[in-house]
Length: 115
Image (cartoon, rainbow, N blue to C red):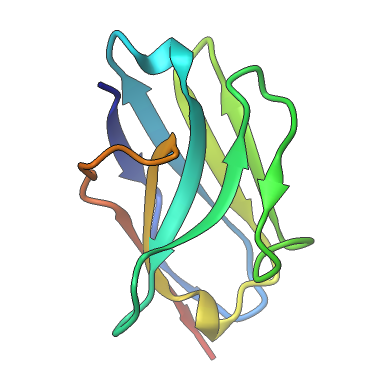
């Protein structure tokens, strides 16, 4: 299992940037690709980005491509999501997990984008 703790979410204005973090741990942490997911109000949780554990081959869903950047620091067991040109539609609770995801989730971190 991989355990995850997300942090860094807050209220921002549309157009601003924000970086959120995911600290991960556990015996299996070195064997899984990692991903970012989000759940907007009233919607199902959705996958938005993934990265290979080596830090290579990032992939983004169209909704965030060109605006968000995923990265990983294996020395710190931390994954990041740099979010730019934020829109009100990006308002959501953001989660990290393995890719594909395990059947449990952390608390997530709330990102709210005001117009």
